Amino acid sequence: MLGFWRRSEAAERKERQDQLRKKLLTEFANNRQSNCAQTAIAYCEYCITEYEEWFEFNEGRWLGWQKIAIIFGVAATLVAAITVPPGLIASYPIFGYFGWLRAIPAAIATVAATFLGSFMYREDAVRHELTANALWNELVKFQVGAFPYNNKDEAADTSAFMGAICRLIEVEVNTWGASVRGQREGDVNPPPGAPNGHPHASLKPPAGSA
Image 1 (cartoon, rainbow, N blue to C red):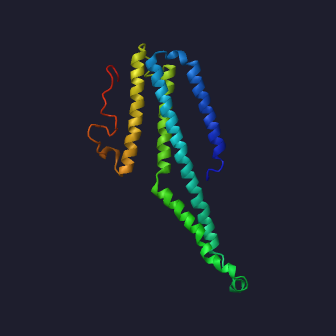
Image 2: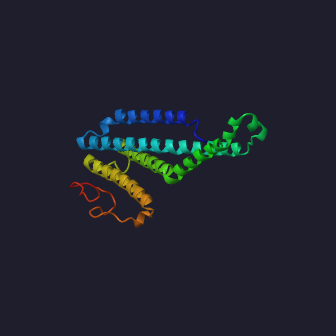
Image 3: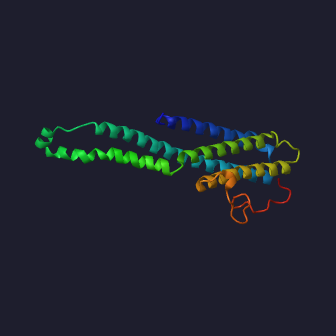
């Protein structure tokens, strides 16, 4: 529940992903031989790696602070129920400091809860994982020649593939911007020169691209 056993699962998932990468880049390497196609595949690989790393970063902090909040919240409740007999304090004055020491677990739990409430670790992790999975799907379809990348013209397939990658990244960036601004995605006011809210959206695509 708290994610204590997720490390082995993450390692197994990483191994499966590496095996799939190796399979795609070796068995289906001859399917896309043009320089443009190889560049598009490399760019997609780069984006996937970036989103996977950000997913692991945000997921680790979300689970970490969640564990701290729960553990120290329970500890604070248990410690608050403990009372030190006055006779014991009279015999051993050091136990008189126990009163303010009991506040430490509650303070730590409060800090952890503040981090969870102030930063969108969970939301960012979910968004990055969804984007990485979507990019994976496009890469697999492009490598094996599945629809819509099953045209006889590899240049057209590559153009459509790059268009799909850019759209996925643009949607992720717009969603992130909307969440930061506290607005719905449709209410985002993009900066001048970027009609879709993406910093590079104003750049014109090369001739013949989708």
